[in-house]
Length: 251
Image 1 (cartoon, rainbow, N blue to C red):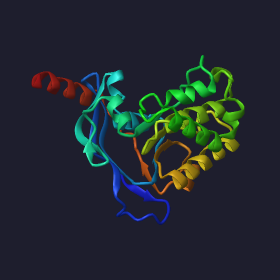
Image 2 (image 1 turned 120 degrees about the vertical axis):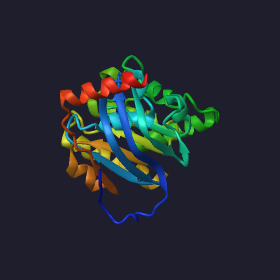
Image 3 (image 1 turned 90 degrees about the horizontal axis):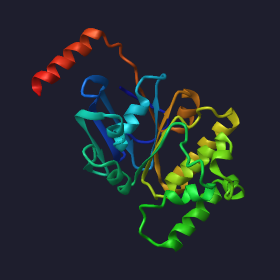
Image 4 (image 1 turned 30 degrees about the vertical axis):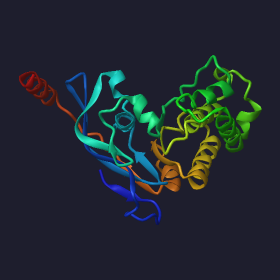
């Protein structure tokens, strides 16, 4: 997987995240990813591009360590964040280190208000109510629509507003890196543009880095410093059978 340059950010920038030749297996049998490598510089925006089914979401879940909830695991390679390996950590530990994933489809707590959803993002913080309240005000500065709707039940808000809630909730954890999965999914073009403008502003003003998994190549590369393209390889039944036999033999 080769990077595509999107602007003049230097290739020598310090790597905040490094994914090195990882392989992902589901259910100890099904090979889903193989040979995936990418780097994210400090304060950078990286686009992860590819068709539906190419493995973008799986790559993000491998980085955030959410694979175990789906019986998946990284079986080869390594993932380092801020200089330390994280591929064997618990997902909660990854969050505490400052790496947050915003899931595809937004996944707000539908029965909670917009503001209650945002405050759940600060659950792991221990710096006091005043700091959390200040950051909440900052989120409302970036998403003024959420301030207007802060008492509304999240499940009754629009798709664009829910995407803003999901992103704002992630930011309440004070992350260094946000993994943003298909932010344009199901949104009108004007709202997609608004979301990406906010991402660019957050990156510019706060230094938060982003990995954005997208099918919309044009808008992703307009805002990203680099783009990586995931290509889905064809797997035969014979390949799967061979891997299953090998795993049983190793066991």
